[in-house]
Length: 113
Length: 112
Image 1 (cartoon, each protein chain N blue to C red):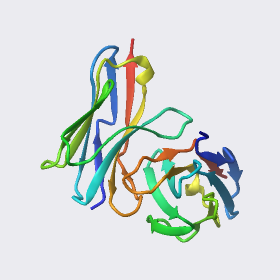
Image 2: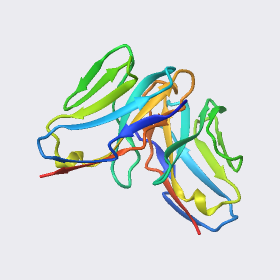
Image 3: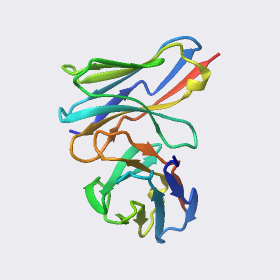
């Protein structure tokens, strides 16, 4: 069974640009959650999608957005990039969401210069 | 409050010893407590998880102890091995939607 796939693995962007990250969950999983990981703030929840609907959102500005497609694949978009957005962005998939085993991808390392 | 406090920040244990990592939470709505292991360059991987209706869960060398009244839980790694060297995160999840709150992480180093 294939794991969670995130693409691309690495990205370098310039301040002010926008970026789209992709996550393909494990087959059959309907929940996809996104997290930002930085040395200073640790792992922080961004949002969760379940069956194409955003079910929950963390405390991030509106520049961070996402969507989920009918095949459960999800994308995350960050507009008007800031230096502070440099981080490892992780997605996790699970069958039902809360209280069930979540599987993480390897993440996308975003560097904003 | 959604915070989960984790300690220690780093831990050095000799091979064969017991590694102990502690976490405390405040929100009594949390009802699922997973532990994740993360190696450099990899995403976190679920190690073991517990629900508040049990006080202990063991899987191989890994044991979670859970104290509901104190709102604390801990991970014990028995017979620690160099291959266990990684960063460990505790987490708490509340019912409804997957909004997992993570601890700040513990960097474990097991020395031969």
